[in-house]
Image (cartoon, rainbow, N blue to C red):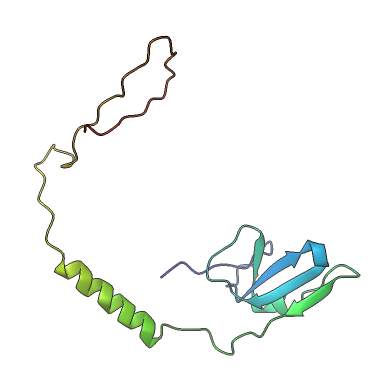
Length: 129
């Protein structure tokens, strides 16, 4: 489960309940339920700031329906978690590595250098064929 997201307004330490997005082409502000993921060009707002939202003159506010109660884990979420645990338990165990050995991956080798090309500080390592 992710961390609780806070309101984007400065000095506000309340948890966010809504997400605000601006549609500049339409001069519209869209305020809706808290987005699943934090987006870089959206603003998460607490209940107080979502209720008192004002927009520039000439802009329109589109308020989407807000859920009455925060969504908790549903039966589908719990079944998906149980299936993931069963799947992980049914996989064969990975071979144990000896202390000091990093992994069982094959060694990588440098590609052949064509004559007359300058080698930079970065190079590609290809798996041996």
